[in-house]
Figure 1 (cartoon, one colour):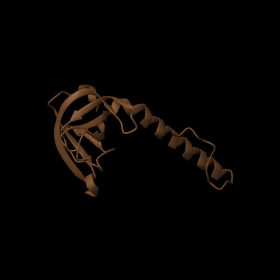
Figure 2: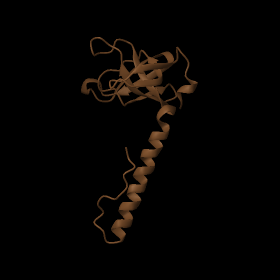
Figure 3: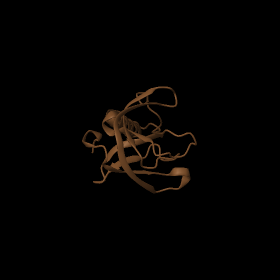
Figure 4: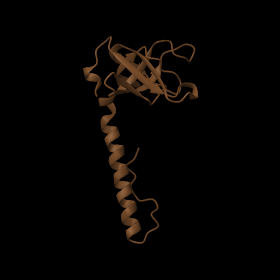
Length: 134
């Protein structure tokens, strides 16, 4: 899935472990698209999906899905004065992080190949010189 096909008012699901309660699913609607928000480090996070699906501490990093079950974003943060959900949550669209996901997977495959070659050559299977991973 991608967030480019989302519409304001469309139902979405947020999955995560809010407050340590694993396997929690909440639903809401897309409240706005292409929002820019400030991250906790002060950086701008652009292109976010705003939703009223409950995103609480522990949901960050979990998927935001459309009703077809396709991941359209990664739950990222809320705007709240209390630290709990106030109906304003944000997810980074999948297409904004897709290249990073692919790079991590490619790096893992390369590390695994290096480990196997090292073992076949009689090495200990330990770490390799690959330092591309962020």
